Image (cartoon, rainbow over all chains, first blue to last red; front, side, top):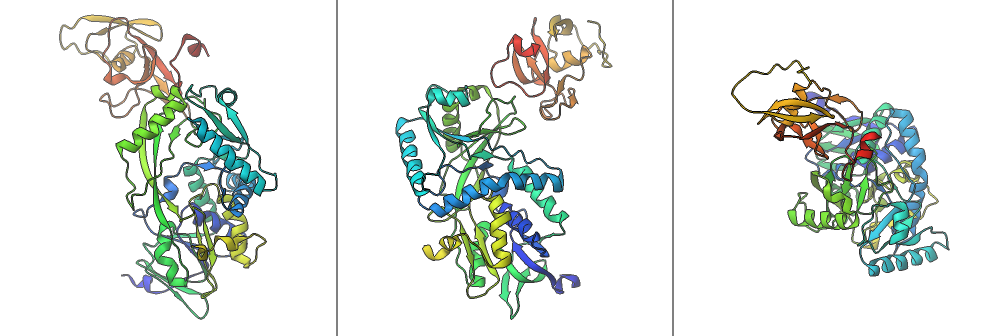
Length: 371
Length: 111
């Protein structure tokens, strides 16, 4: 190891993990005037941020936890401001569109179940929870190409989508432009609480910081105990199919199929418990394609050009973990499987909480003691 | 249409001549030629524009790898011209931007 690696580099705050969650949180922390460094593992990392679907999604999120519905909707409301700031800072248009979204179903039973769920959520929100149940004719008012097997849909005007790869790039460029450092440090070996702050050991040397944020997705499982926290997260695989670019026809995102601003068709929403295998399988790809072409028969004539698997960062109840270490003040855990939807929340209120240790939000429901 | 391109044909055998249409104009090509070769022989480059930036493109690798030769052939869009053998009467058109999701019609071409 070279001599330079022995001298510790310093920052006000280090985040471990430079995916969408870490970058968005880091941007928000910079607005508090903090000198922020991100330690990002390497391209061997699992990289959920490179594999996701890109929905900014509200409907149905938090059906058993109103606080999760609350922060999801808050984030959706803050998203246009984040997109504007990213465009100003970097010139990158992240293709945010929030004109509403549809969750299509192929059975009447599923439409009825979703309506019942959303009615419960409306009640939990004191009546303020906009959605509509649509029959096939009403679905076709939004998307004329919906197929005859579609039983109906639920529609929520607060849903939307972005281009997640452009988002990743914009967040990275904005963070660097505001003076942030990203170190490709390899996997963090240890975090040592000091009398003041923390010392972080990596294969690329040592960093010292006053605060540390764990935003390493599935890697948080091993990092959290180093600062007196627990991160019971596990992988859940989703597979995604990409079809060739076509002229715009799908003007609203759906839970299973969306068209990007550049015309690409993205199809997904599989859920598999297969450990740390981020590969693809013919069986699941066929299921995904079958459902999508029944929803939109027009897709049958399109060529599939890519497919990939990615691992969601899941908890037992599917909700995020936001927690400050009581044992080692200054250490925080931030992890979730909705880094796109919650991006604006992370870049705003969540970063404010980490910077000031104060919040009006009910973040205590997201700590790991609930498991 | 005369050979308007910078690709002069090297006579290698006595293959038959076949007539195809490129953007509505009849051109003579050799049986066994690819649709991409027909486009080059007609000098019809750029032969497509890209879906996002509308940037001009023409056949390049001629061996099925680069996808720069995408054409509309007999009403089917985004076909690899270099991997498609000409047939008498084949209708070849430039691929302008992204393909349509639905089968292409005459009205689409007018727009």
